[in-house]
Length: 90
Image (cartoon, rainbow, N blue to C red):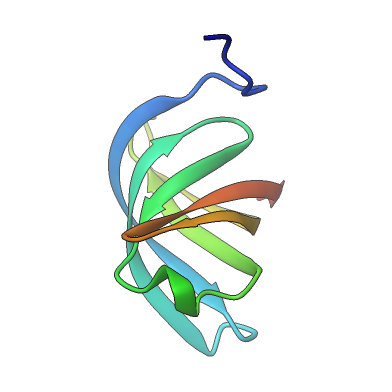
């Protein structure tokens, strides 16, 4: 079967935070995989996530730790997680 993704995914195991409601609400998450275009996160209640969220995580694979904040669109919900498409990464 042909891969339809525009970006190569890599498996990761980073902790992160999903933020929404102008930062008033935060939810802990676990990054499962990551690409230049998005991420798959494990979260306890993906049904409660709005369509747009911020994902915040430490980029631990670099020589110097760096906090990444990505503005994301929820493109798919799963029973234990959500697929996110990056709209803007800072």
